[in-house]
Image 1: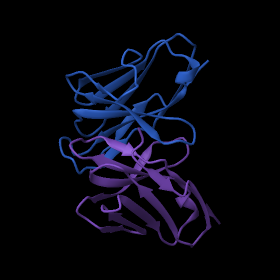
Image 2 (image 1 turned 30 degrees about the vertical axis):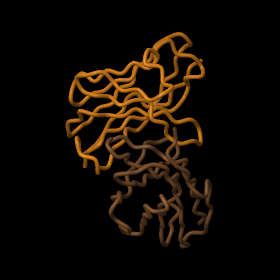
Image 3 (image 1 turned 60 degrees about the horizontal axis):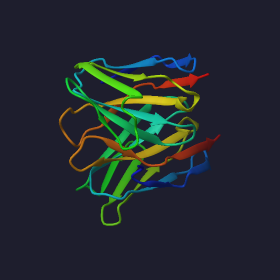
Image 4 (image 1 turned 120 degrees about the horizontal axis):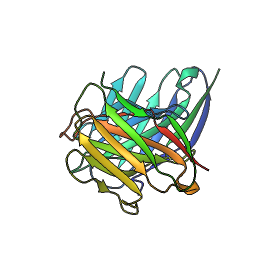
Length: 111
Length: 118
């Protein structure tokens, strides 16, 4: 079963604007990861945040994690047309290596 | 960087036939791999955990006799969809965690296989 939900399901913004996506989950986790998927392709790992971390940066990406609220957010700053893709959060469940994915956010960056 | 290769990228088969999908780790050994299924515009649903040298672990609701998994070597896992039917048409993706045996590790994904059963 799906671990969590993502919000919004779809997001359309202008190039240069910031995009924020949220993810909620249900069970205890080792880590939370964000992945990107271009249409009909495999997934590309973006960033991993451990359960004892609260914020992490990677280039134009900023991820936060609030374990008390069981939620995470992904911020993409200064968006580009090439950022158009689906973004998924995935939780690493305690005691296991497997990942459970959220519903995903379809992000469209308009030039 | 670590690469996971999945083959074929797409396949069309007749109803009742079986289809084999391969997932290879190209520059690292993977004792554990995962198989996911994705319907259009939906998320990835974990089907099973493939374990090298032992039986796969299937998620609840996944028919193990329908989706046969073999992980005979440290770099290859295969998923065979047996007696395929149109409802099996989907996008199948494999993944392997780069840090085998550790919990906080990213996963590398294959390119996916688009299966269409006619």
